[in-house]
Image (cartoon, rainbow, N blue to C red; front, side, top):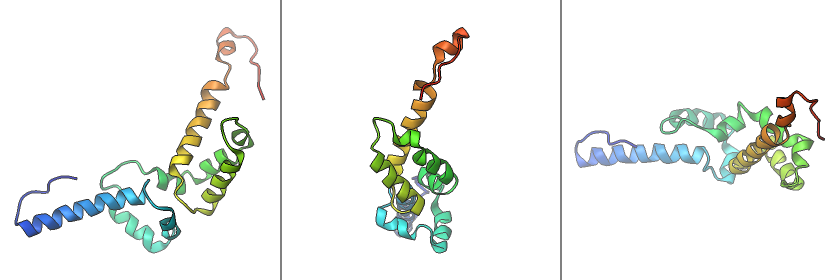
Length: 143
């Protein structure tokens, strides 16, 4: 969080408190946001306040990216029947996460990152037939 220099004790206390509050605000607004607080996340006032502290300590803001820039991508991954039919996923839980993501309620960052990571590993590493690709033999498409 940085030191911020030296000065009178009262000024140092205010500086430390300010840095601590910025640090905690960014963490809570990112991955640590409680579910009940996500209701206010789309408020224009909250968006303005967000700009004052997001990026002060961290450079990755996955919850915000999933909420805004990657909203359609996350919805596509969760809504894909291929994802829901994986034996290691619960179809009902995937549907609940998709509904929560679509309605933009709750902080499901941990669940979303795990599902997307596992699904991308499945698609890119496990479902591909690399041996046949390297030998030039026809590639068998599995369903």
